[in-house]
Image 1 (cartoon, one colour):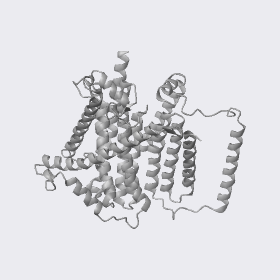
Image 2 (spheres, rainbow over the protein chains, first blue to last red):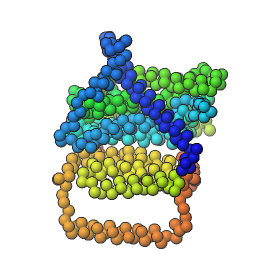
Image 3 (cartoon, one colour):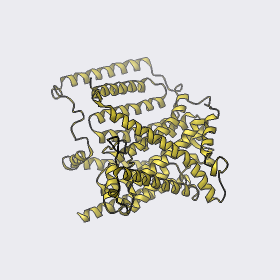
Image 4 (tube, rainbow over the protein chains, first blue to last red):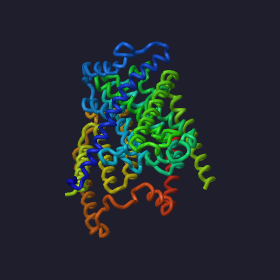
Length: 347
Length: 166
């Protein structure tokens, strides 16, 4: 079926996939908030949310209902349009990352060969970078439009933190790209599936730097200075209420999921299940096993994020900047030189 | 009209409307946001030309870094629309004449150029915008200008650090 020289079945297939991935991300994010509270409770030796439903499993639904039914307040002196735009941008930017993540190998449904990836562009990882650099707008615009000095301070902090750690992130990534020779996430994962080792073996320092930068980019503890309660009250979303606040909080969790997926794909083999021969089962089942493997890796990373949040105290602002500029960037450059030297020696 | 033409005209209209909004917005923050939309539209054009690398670098560098800096400066200076000094009529008049003459000059130049005559843009074809051919070209044919410009960037960075230290 082609109208306007378009393959409409292709468009519909992609739309369905986008819908599935977006709603799955939202669902996982919903239960990540629950997981966060449970992990915190376990680490602090208390039961945590346990009233709503069995094991408190209905708690996130109750939280969501509470957020939606709260009164929506837009401050009188706030810039109304930008105030509404802020949370929307934060949410959009965090969901856009999912477009280039390979969720598994292809599956065959009704005779159609469906790749479990929305777009395999040859600049995949650069696209992720562009989206990450967009993410800061949601915070900056929301913080500025609130017309509150604490919000503005927090927005400026968030922006400078994001820009500083993007550099270290990019440099850590370049070392990885030198070994893979491709920017497409699909190719990077396939190399790890076919090859002997995952990329973490070749790039341990690069992964460590990338992980720290990812913590900072997601505004997670120990780098959650944009929302430091004891200095800035509540940070950039101080004036927000109801679902607009919910969007900001949700965007943070979706960022966590997406950065976990990116790290799993780049350094930990993506959908590759180790010591398992994918060719020994039917292609569809192998693809489903792949998706499950990637999801498990994502959950493990999210747990790591939470573990760090409830263990390590917050940095001071100058410590944050010193770590970013004087430790991470030189280490990343060293890693780059080392990788280059090894590649040259192997030639 | 095929799909590419529809996309081309939609993107062009989007770019021009956003560019006009940059000029007529009273609030400087709004201007910056419209300017970001212009960059997105231009990146869309690059994608139509199959120059994916250029498209994404345009977004990373301009929309992602430079515009954040613009926002920073405007937010810190706290420019409000009512405090903005109004320019005199004479200055506005001179500006209109100068800008108009420059526009006429540009249009005349583009119309006269023989290199552009009878040429159509390569749409969806040509691989020079993809990352492998682009990298090969940069590091073989254009390696000297490329390296010189990187030294230039490095010196600019060192300069910025020194100014920041003062």
